[in-house]
Image 1 (cartoon, one colour):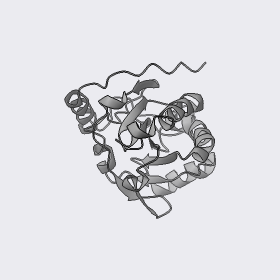
Image 2 (cartoon, one colour):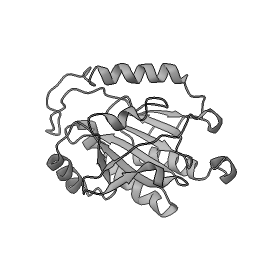
Image 3 (cartoon, one colour):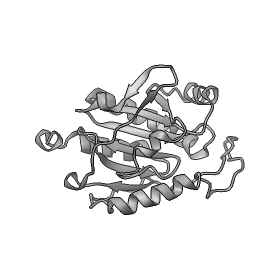
Image 4 (cartoon, helix red, strand yellow):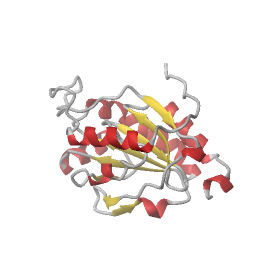
Length: 208
């Protein structure tokens, strides 16, 4: 059963979040043991999440997130070009068992929300291009993913609500601010509910 999405709450202090994210990045996401998951993917050692959802009230959101990169298909993606719509950012790797588990859910949520204007983009981290492309083909992923470029993209989230685990999913509002974070694998129902909620935020508030 998918756990209910919690009520909106205040964001944690930016300094505390930034410090925690930086510590995890410096540790190389290595608190989990390396090995082989049940899916056959090498886990490489990562910080696993339990699917905890953090919602940030509109008035408590930090500055807009800025990042860009090249997709696995060789095209440029800049999140600044997406201002005015809701953007879902998923951090993943083909070597990560929970990422493999949630891949169908992400594609499903994308298919269910893109007609309303939502944009999905993956951030592929600590991976080889061939392995990442094989993952997309295996699960029929049709939204783009960009390479993490040695952690540069993850650092873009450090001053907001950081992506501290793999997988992590961030939902950015129309201003590019982090409206929600899912730490760990996400279900299609939960993600669709969050995206629907952010999409229906009043226009005046979304563009203030």
